[in-house]
Length: 217
Image (cartoon, rainbow, N blue to C red):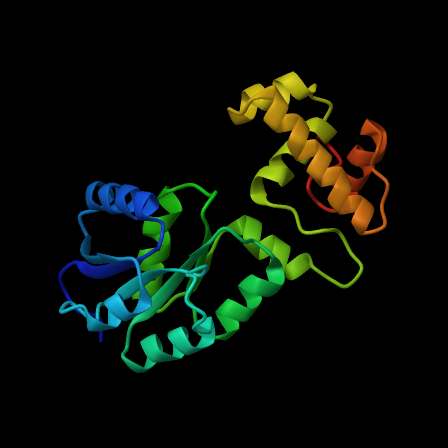
């Protein structure tokens, strides 16, 4: 049965700066979410006087050697819903986390607004992942396209659509050097997967083939 009143949320992230920024952001983002705990370690969460909470926003990459599956099953048995945050967007990692009981999965490079949507969905017992991750999970198959981050996909889409590097950088709010390093990384990932996208034409064809760019773009 859903509780009335605000969603009681706990944050767990060992990057103090990010924890501070998230705390500040969430407190101002939504009236229906009450941040009751923001901690840097797993034991701190479990021993917090506010625990159990309704939803935990949990960093997948905590350096504590406690398996994520164990954390998820612990939270599940206490009736806490979990949304994971990570720097990784590899479909295999996401799939494993969702299979282990996480209700949401957010990549830290995505829009902050998604956090609120994911917390609300989890509180209702619904799963939430971004469209981008959903596509990645459902389109991945052996020997197929390499796994690109959200930003790499954006760079590849714009560049493949014919934009010069300078324009790609401007549209994404990054420097030209950063855009070039993204392209270098994209080409390297494809090379490791057995595809040569050294030319702009080859990269465009690959982007269309892998669904990053629509044929009409």
